[in-house]
Length: 187
Image (cartoon, rainbow, N blue to C red; front, side):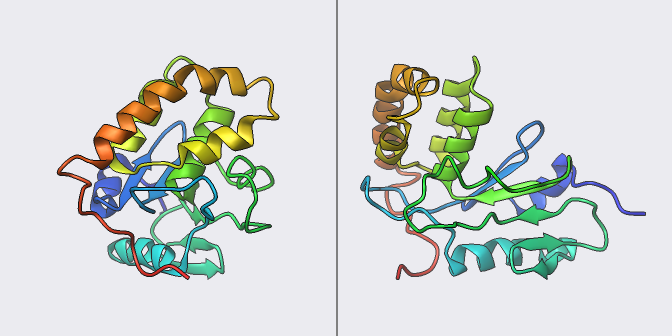
């Protein structure tokens, strides 16, 4: 009988490069980089995908399709949403993706932040984003640029932007992240 991924199973594959936002978010962040330029491309490269898949080997996960990992032991699947356009907004990556209640989106840290801002924008957004940043810094300037045309989310993000920018500046210079490099190579 298949079961859904539990908190204990998260701990089997979570590490410095993988951060899980469990229920109610069902998001996985795969470490991208510690420093960003607002014009950086934001996509899950092959090395990041393969790294995550290897971490799930113990749970018998394998590719069901080009962007979905599944296991004979678990009902939970891990979905890597496809980027339609290289320079697309990180806010749009999950817009047209379908998932079941137990499924997880596997995203870059900036895409996770965009998801949290768009769909879970409530009292705890600052704490959730700080928690993410403490493990995986995000491209705050890219988020700010893409929010310029969204009159409902822009004020919320702008109200916490400076706090996040200052917090992230401390984190990327901390011993924990100072020498951390990205997974795999860049194009």
